[in-house]
Length: 290
Image 1: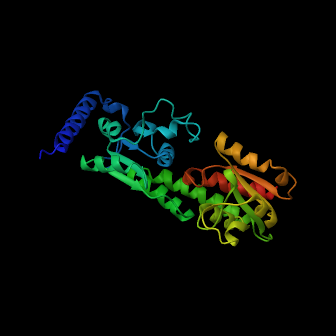
Image 2 (image 1 turned 180 degrees about the horizontal axis):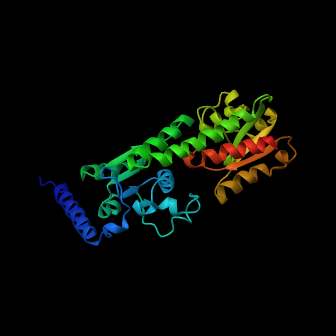
Image 3 (image 1 turned 30 degrees about the horizontal axis):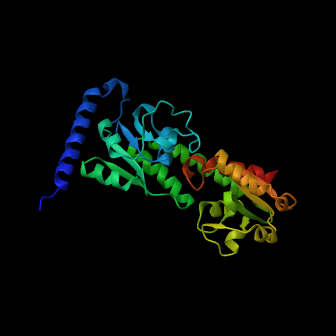
């Protein structure tokens, strides 16, 4: 029996070769790419919205030849306005190959099929794991910076983050821990094993979800939330839809008359934590001091 898959494979190989040839002919002149050491990638592509945001802070923007389409969407990205006009991708290998990047960055769970194909084409692909603890965030920033030749900028970022977290910790000294829920859309509270829980501990808050044995993200009935009598309810200022939904829950008459303080923080700790962690620490410290 004939193998019908081989012609398809050959055709794909030919198309990728054709794309690469055309792209090579149309590549921007060298003077448009900033001068970097020989071992440093000059042309960088990313398939991940969170990595995009870090790269935007670390490297000259001319070196970014492609970023995730989500980074250009204001619903998901805080830098959407800044990246207008940038070349975007949808996690497809055929979008990346013609650009001939020196390195392609991806997250832990991004575009497995595309990454496998890019590796078969001998493209350099670097996967970065999802930060699961606060220490992981600094490690990721420095790791990414080393791969793009921007260590000094990363060290300054890490220093700023550490200073903001230290201020948050210092502010809790001598104070009685307050009880709290970290509350998001659809009545979800955030328990142990999360960055949010670690942040609450740093701020001197008692996470009522964790104390009830909850791990990760869990729905909590309104009646149970009220019976726990939290002193603090933390809400993230996210996209309009998500934030409105969380606020809709907060507008419930039972919650309107509850005796707790609502603290609103910048969104993104569960998503692109590295770029918001400092702002979250500062806002939480300031809100608890009011």
